[in-house]
Length: 298
Ligand SMILES: *[C@@H]1O[C@H](CO)[C@@H](O)[C@H](O)[C@H]1NC(C)=O
Ligand SMILES: *[C@@H]1O[C@H](CO)[C@@H](O)[C@H](O)[C@H]1NC(C)=O
Image 1 (spheres, rainbow, N blue to C red):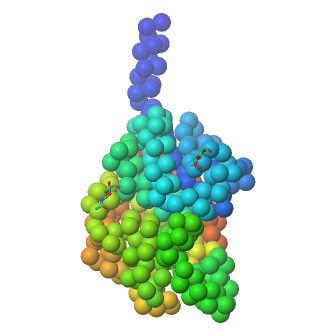
Image 2 (cartoon, rainbow, N blue to C red; image 1 turned 135 degrees about the vertical axis):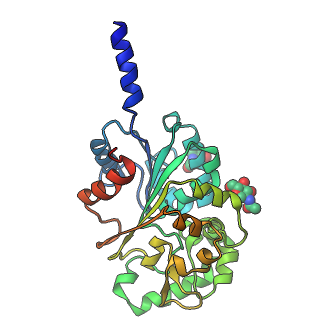
Image 3 (spheres, rainbow, N blue to C red; image 1 turned 180 degrees about the horizontal axis):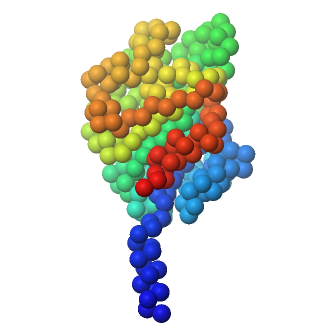
């Protein structure tokens, strides 16, 4: 009898449970419906036996979760999620985080703003995230239509009005490359977490505690414009045609967010997939993400 108890104890010590995973869905999606993140959660559970997955629901129910993706300020959403994660005892030994689309920059916000109050966040993996914001409307990128350029110029006039920033989530990561100064002053979410106004050392320290920050870009993305934002790139300031990479940007060169330091330490990982927004095969995900970051083979 004693032998068995000791054996089970040793077994528990040696074969540790897999690292839990937190998911944050994108705009127009929710935590749990079976056609999207619900089935992705099942996919993770099947391929990492015993893993605990917390797919974040921002709101008291799924409908609120959907609405909040459009109308609840990201700053409030992040605070709400910081509290959810702090009270989830199953995460107490640390976890990995996966963001989908706008959930990517929101999870990065969580890491930066409350990482020091949470168990260790090991790897942050972002799929089609908008780390430098967006300048364009869904599907406009692929269509290359003239009216798209007209509409985005029009949106420029209103995006940074305080009431629009408060009323519409997507305005808080609208990034107008033609007027960087107004963006830096007016963007209540993105310009702050990207340390565009002041340098917040807590953000730098928290981000640097990650083991890896993996960014996945979709080369055929018709939703996110410009696609380079998924790798933390953006238009060169002052125009909206020529792109610059993260490494070419002032943010990196002056290292306002500690990304240069992370890059030199091999913590930044840039991956891409050929398809449209969030399109990837399960095999690719198993080989490149699960086996490498979520459940590495010892
Ligand atoms: C949860 O419900 C309460 C009461 O209706 C509401 O005030 C609150 O905003 C809801 N929470 C979220 C995150 O939507
Ligand atoms: C920096 O970020 C921390 C954590 O979110 C916050 O408490 C603090 O007020 C911020 N400082 C500045 C100067 O914005």
